[in-house]
Length: 203
Image (cartoon, rainbow, N blue to C red; front, side):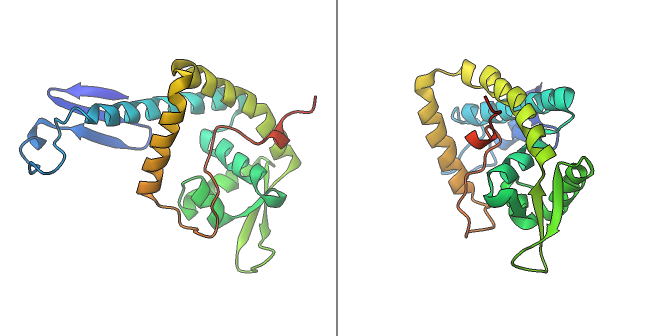
């Protein structure tokens, strides 16, 4: 959510708070750098607000209809798309953008529900892997209906189709510039939007 605080603008999500504009910042930046009153920052503010609100809404719908968080759904998608539906814990952490301790807690919850099994790594006895179970695949198929409907309703339906390619190019460029992929050996897209066709219900 966002709120105006006098001449300031504060954007909040469930986990972070950004002060994207503060009146006192105006004179703090040299002229050669981006200024806090630069009108181009409107796009940045809109991105933060849209991302926070959309993520919250999608998470709320998954929890209400399937007792599954958005992060848990994302982990199931990544496992379903992986070879043999299994991933090393470190690789899964990088794909769902969590710390190793964070992904461990997430997998603990999914394992307790019977959606994931934790196994010893086939190629490295020191590592652990998470494997999607049949129950987890069935859960993902059910939740995908709700999740994709939300993506369509709150994102795709509000944007002109002609703008989607430009939005994708822009956000892909931002993601590449920001970097942060800890596993250079794997060049896989990160997505929470769509499990692959193999996950579609039969018929």
